[in-house]
Image (cartoon, rainbow, N blue to C red; front, side):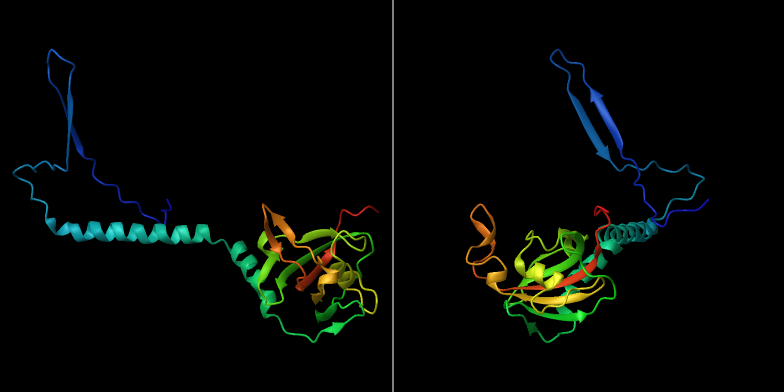
Length: 224
């Protein structure tokens, strides 16, 4: 029979003594807990107290095993992969930005080999969004799934529509491509703060935003 990699040391049960004294008032109970060990018969050798280090070593081994198991449980490989990919866009190769007449800055880190994004259709993208100082404020990677959005109909900020679909001198992205976008305020959220909740806003007014876009593919649920 196969044995578990974790050996669990079971402590010797403590003896419990209860006394119920007969008294005219309500009975009282007392509990005495000790680690009393019965003496061996006269003909048997006495146990040596040198076994204490062995018990300590056993407990230590169990502790190490449980610690290793907890680390594996709290750090699944999928989470590690997502975490690495989440921060990877910050360290991707730099590319020289080109600028459209609208003020949108764009450059391709990887030119895709698939199809263009159809106007008005749903597409799947991964993205990391940062402020101009490089601070990340949102990312699809931390949610471990791409964002599905409808492109070209004003459902997202203008900079994303133009940066993915193309137009005004910007070539369309192809599936499998990775593009870096620098979106000025007039193509982002403009003079009003965005992402506000209870008075706190995630994106300040007149913010220039940096997006790293990974065009994963066309959404399979689009109507044929």
